[in-house]
Length: 408
Image (cartoon, rainbow, N blue to C red; front, side):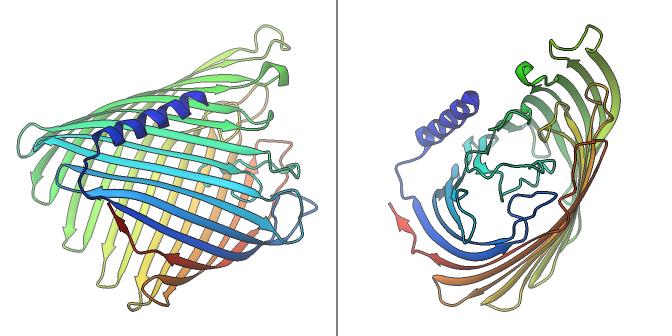
């Protein structure tokens, strides 16, 4: 995880070094939430339901100009449960986004995110295998996630451009039974504007992911190499509707290493050909926006010794009733399947269904009330030690205060 911290520090240093001395904006806000959760430990048995109180301030430094745009964001959240003791604590989330255009045809960018959060209530949607059913009642069980991406693009002509990127992601679990994951990715691509409404492209990437099991816990380790080649098309179907599609083959090579306790012969190698894809359809109305997307990609281990192929379908709807009332609704289907079986077990397949609703009302220019409800259910096959955690319900009411921006 030290590499993740170093990457984040270097990224923030790069952005601060390139930031101008001209006026920029500091935005501050704070949320006070009161809510309830029907299974705070995500256990399959002896479920504990409890209410909670959260205080979540947020600070952003941003600037938007023709050559330089950046946004640095940090949000700590303190959560306290009403009846359950010993599990209160902080979660942290930070992000950075920088785009620099030194010339009219060159663009250099950096994007980074960091999360440090407890596994008790804040289950990570991108790692649905976590948390495991038998969590201890301790605030010391945490997940740290870090990712960073540097990219460069150049317009060779008014219709043709090339891009290249390097990225890094790391998942660190603060408990021995889950396997950490780290990956490095390099990519290159090109895009050609066929017409004002249509753009086509071709891209390729190579990634190496290492899932690091501990020999002391008799965990397997896996190294996965992935090469993706894809064609893409983006088209404006109408002034209010856009579609984007990207797809291609994915060549996967996996090497699995058994811990020393196993006899020779448990190490294995595997080669397979799959596909990855991304499709998105967006429709806009005067007061509403709907977005339907499908993604298929290789992902981190989700706490297991094997990387996974993840399929995700998401439907998002935003509607503004008037100047005060707004609604955000979201439904998703998520299926995660291990690329290879670990040891003598079967490949684990996990399926999750979720839905959430958020209603917001502005009381004044600075004060808003937010109501949120989410539902999630999940199934898993291929693991004999999995206990279903059943249906999950979480909801809260939040009072949000947004301060006037500070220009400096």
